[in-house]
Picture 1 (cartoon, one colour):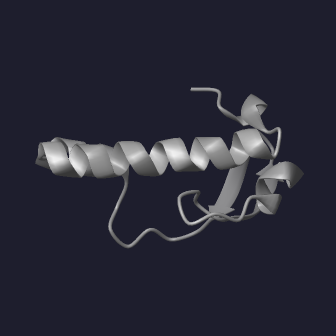
Picture 2: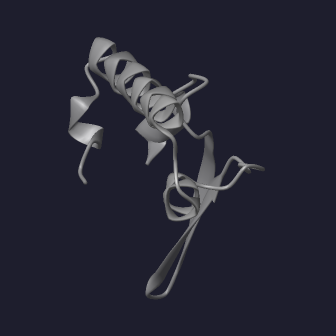
Length: 75
């Protein structure tokens, strides 16, 4: 989890910490006022919007790869 706090990139959600309680782990992450990708997909995306989101994901993954953090992509 410590590694996540080192990622600073406009296309990667900020991670501020976590708290472990019994069987639960709470992660404190940056607020995304426009919602998440799932919500955007459910509303329907144009081809142009799809390309925009895809580019942002690739840029974020390239950033992690450049920092040798490709092990973080788990899903």
